[in-house]
Amino acid sequence: MKNFKKFMALGLVAAMAGTTLAGCGGGSSSAAGSSAGSAAPEASAAGSEAPAASAAGSEAPASSAAPEASAAGSEAPAASGNGGTTDQVSGSHVFMFKSVGNNFGVIMYDGFSSYMAQVGEPCIEKSPAETTVAAQVQLLDESITQGCKSISISTNGDTGFDQVFEKAKGANIPIVSVDSEASADYRVVHNVQASTADIGAMQVRAAVLIELGVSYDPSDVTMEKTVETALADYSGEELHLGVLSAGIDTPVQNGWIAEMEKELSKDIYKGKVSAELDKKYGDDEATKSTTQAQAFLAENKVDAIISPTTVGIAAAGEVLTQAGSDIKLTGLGLPTEMNKYMPATDADNEFDFVCPYMMLWDVTHLGASTAAIQMAIQNDGYDGSAGSTVSMEAWGEYAAEDFTTDDAGNGATTLLTGTPFVFYKGNMTEWANKL
Ligand code: RAM
Image 1: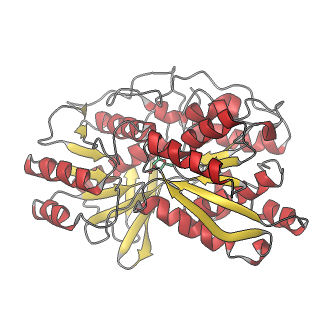
Image 2: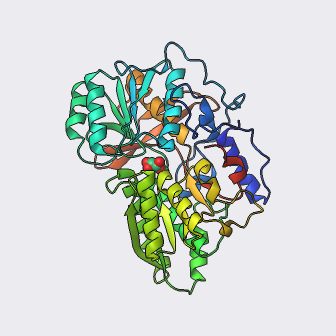
């Protein structure tokens, strides 16, 4: 399996040269329900720093190609000791996603547990059945009582955790949030997949460009210039965008939506794209997301739907495709879940599909880098202060990397460990069955 980082670098070059990439080695997808634990760096299928993505201001450390993994499904580097997934909370690093049954969380835990296996540390996934704060609080409380070593969490809301986080603090159990942030009062740091501003703005730009029938241009990764030019030439009716999000209180999606609104308030959109987003919430549940997508269809008020959640975008893809709707779709999705609604090859007309292009980032690396943060806290005295560094070991196909902590204001700090990546007809051949 090819290194994602390398792949993306090659992808950019190839795309700029107007050529297509030769196929990567095949790879089984960890998205397809890979078992928690020892999963190898299929992780590696995805990669962090796409040089491309750095265009939006997210720093891309120099690309250092790591050795290629032997084959799809290859084991993670030999674990020293009893590292990786265990069924014991006591003495283990707890990883908690928003809920079970979300492949994004499954893939992230694959990365987390693979890195923990490598460094010989036990870990366990404790994600709730329901995407609620209450369900997470209960599991957190139990995990702390049972003596877990650390907590890595993607939260379902920004309030309601104080008491249980206080309990963790009292027990010296470090909290790192990832994907969806925890309060700065309790977390050591928040691990960010890619700049919130980039992710929010790129989704708006993609929705508008898709509506205007403009293909994704990989030489303009963030689509900023392309959308400006396309809108300058546009004199049609005002476009209306809808958002199919996760929970109404979910920090990560709400952060992106705020950036979407900021983007839409720019002059280039005035009179051409409504500044108002029509928002609906599917709670990251397939059934609820489907109902909300059907509501968009029935109301017929939006030209395009942005879904900043892998659960929502897949549900909307199905609903819109089944209905043969004119409403277009973009957002954040897993290629393995979206391939049915997207172009497959360069030869396709992407506008024949409900979702011509969409974005995501290296989900496995996000999990692995979270494990690296926990290791830095445990072994190197990392305290999440701005300017301090987390060193991530070489892992699978990835070379060793250092990440520097950023000041996020209001006493909060973040660590940027990834960049956004666009999936479109020029690279779906590579990604349709992995990630
Ligand atoms: C979903 C989750 C997650 C989000 C991704 C893009 O699986 O809501 O929080 O980051 O989509």
